[in-house]
Length: 388
Image (cartoon, rainbow, N blue to C red):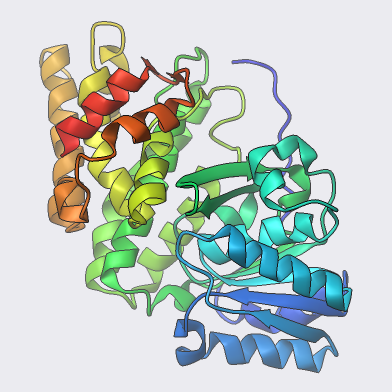
């Protein structure tokens, strides 16, 4: 395990009715915020009204940026930055899932930056300061409510890129599992796949000695495998929604990665699917993950897959190593396809082969993905082909 620094500054208010503390918490930082949210669902389910009530009760002035896309666009970021600068706004309050939160984070940094906010996406070292970010979470998926990461798309250049900064970590996050009751089955499934992928990216590592991180990762994986289908079939099941929501936060807030993680692989490949075809992120991850697993399975990596198969899936340890590994991969794919009803290949996501070469080159950024197994452009293309 290597040296690391771990600090999560987010104050999490978890559980039913925690929205009643929002106004008081925000007022500790500012009396003027930009509300950022997506479509009309937060208004239909009453969450928007609860937020407004809290702001008004605490004399917090608010402005709005609505209709943030599921893969948030740089155009929305620019619009939000303009509003914040024009009205001297002191904080950004995201209502929604990762898309609204990621958009809010880059807006918060862009407000105190003199150049185009896309520059902050291209080069995270430019993120030096930001106005505070607050979140009211409505989807368990990205974990953006408790980390400093953000992913923004530029559809004019077919780019979907991640950026990060310590100052982007939300100050306060309201996590009420009941706010996810109205999330459609499709997005509940995709969110579960996203949490699983975040955990896989940390779990499959070449760094030795991260025993504790691996066991915590396995707990999150088992939580998702157990509660994901329940939440899909019983959307008002509080226990399922609560466990998924908490798993989402801890899968990618640094708990699993610090001291033990490699660069990620599947996310780099999936970001190109979203950049070129605007697919649902979690669905793209679910399609690619089993094919990545099969592609990187070899004599060097098999023991990690055996560990996964035995500890997570309970496969008989007396079986041959490659039999255990392949059974674990099969179970993973079956879970995505049969338990979560996520499409099984890229064709079903509306993706063709036309851009495979371009996407593969962009995924490796002209070099390679130095993850659990190093992948060059030709490897990425083969994985796309296998998933097609």
